[in-house]
Image 1 (cartoon, rainbow, N blue to C red):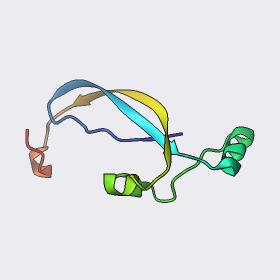
Image 2: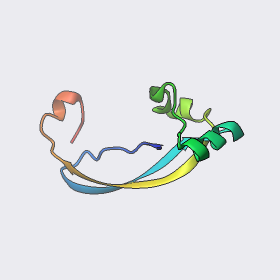
Image 3: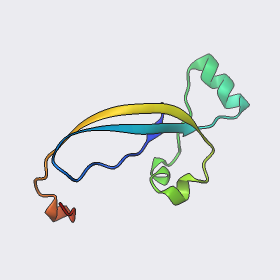
Image 4: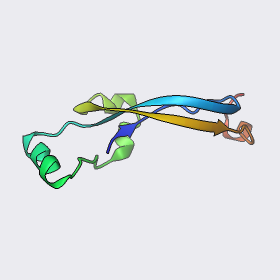
Length: 84
């Protein structure tokens, strides 16, 4: 289990993205539970991780990356304030 963030391209077509992921760094007791019971740490308020100003306060560790293949269609992007 991990969290990640990447920007969706604002140009049409097929895009390949690499999204770096991270997870909360557990203490020794949480790591023991994680290894024995397979539990992963979760953020109590995941929306707090969306902004860089909140994220820098979290103690985290790298969790690899996820490769994404996105197909972007620009229909009604202008209504949402996205400039194309």
